[in-house]
Image (tube, rainbow, N blue to C red; front, top):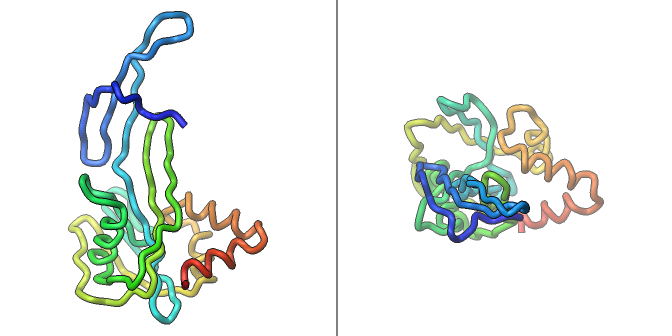
Length: 185
């Protein structure tokens, strides 16, 4: 996958996106200005309770509308993905986990460069009241593993990339069993 060249110049720094430009040599000997966007990395968590339920969210945001999601958010500048995952768990659910395991990291690279980190947060317990942001309404609800798969198939499930991965796992013998073992430890 193509990376943004080290000599690229940041021409815009936003909240979620930075825009880079650079001169690129072309095959005919000429040059052109190329451009790419780098998105702040994100995290999402498959959070479990001690009684082997998964925490999902009924969420609403002004720009996006209503949807079903997993806890998660952006990795703030200067923060590691694991720190961001624990912060999102605490803010959105008021929970802390006994164990945090990185399940997978996906790096998307083309005109938009973005790293997404998927964690499993095992045996989460409430430690404080949630501290939701003003631009979100979040209602957590508990589901079994099978209900989680059903929700991921639904049209309201926000993370289509994860839904696609779960769909592929259903069609590869043993993959869902491995995921279930990873989620519940």
